[in-house]
Amino acid sequence: MKNYTSTKSKILELLKSHHIISGETIAKNLKISRTAVWKHIKALQKKGYNIQSTPKGYILKNNHDLLTEEELSDLPYKVYFFQKVTSTMDIAKDLGEKGEEAIVIAETQTKGRGRMQRTWHSPSGGIWMSLLIRPSLSLKQAFLLTYIASLATAFAIEKITNIKVYLKWPNDVIYKLNKEEKKLAGILLEIKAEIDEIKYAVIGIGINVNNEISFLEPKAISLKEITGKIIQRKKIIKELIFTFNKLLRENPKEILNLWKEKSLTIGRNVKIIHPEGEIEGLALKLSEDGALILKTQQEKILKIYSGDCIHL
Ligand code: BTN
Image (cartoon, rainbow, N blue to C red; front, side):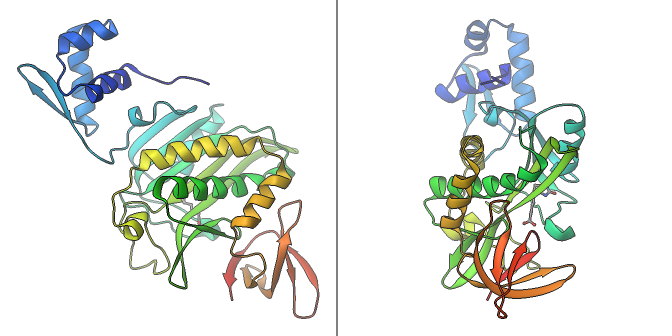
C-alpha cells in the first residue's frame, strides 16, 4: 500500500494527540527546523484548521467535518482536494491522461453533472468525488464498476451512520422515508478505452451528507436530515474506498448477487425511460453482462442496459 503521509499530516497527528505542543517539540520530532514548522502551521491554518498559537505552544481546536488532503492521507490513492471546481470528473480525466490513479474531491462544484446529462447540485457539505483508476477489466466488464461503487457507497453509509439504505437500478443509493424513496447518492461512470481495454475509469460519486438539499430536488435527502447530526465525511470516504477496493477483487457473480440483495428494483414492476422511449415490465434479475432483465406485459423478455428507472 502506498503511503501519502506528508509533513503536514504528521504535524496534525502531533497536534491531535497533544492538548498543547511547542514548535520546538514538533521540530525535533519530525527532524525539521522551527521555521519549517511555522510555515506548515500557517499553511494548515489557511486550509481551515483552527490552530491557536500560545506562549506555551500550538493548540488545535476541533473542527468536526473539515475535509482536506491531510485528513485523507492514509488512503491508498493520491488525494487532490479543491475548494471549488467545475466538476471533479474534469480534473480526474486530465489526471487520467497523465497516467495517474487518484481521488479528486471538491468542497463545491459549479458544474456538477449527473447521469443522462442532468445537473448535480453540489453545495458545500456533501461528498463530491471522482475515483480515477486503471482496473484490469475489459470494456465489457466496465459495468461492474458502477455496481461496485454503488454497493461500496451503500455499505459505507450503513457502517458509519447505522441507517439502512437500498439500491435502485442502475446505481442510486436510496433511503426509505416512511414509504417514500429518497435519493441519498448517485454514481456516474466515464471511461477511456482502447479497443477492448479500459485505459482508465473515472467513477464519480455524489453523496448528500451535511449539505442543504435544493428545492429543485424534492426526491433527494441528506444524511444530516436523516440522522439529525453532522456526519464526518472523511469517515465515509475512507470506508467507501476500503470497501470499493475489497469488492474490486470479488468475482463478478458475487458482486451481482450482493447488488441484488440490496436492491429495491429486482422483483418490482418498473418503468424504464430512455432516449428512445419508455418500457414497463417486471424487473426479474441482472444478467451476467450487467443488464436489467425485464418481462413485459406481453411476456417479452428484454435486456435493458441504460436508462432511468421508476419503481411503480
Ligand atoms: C447521478 O445519480 O446522476 C450521478 C451523480 C454523480 C455526481 C458526482 S459528484 C462528483 C462527480 N462530479 C460530477 O460532476 N458528478 C459526479
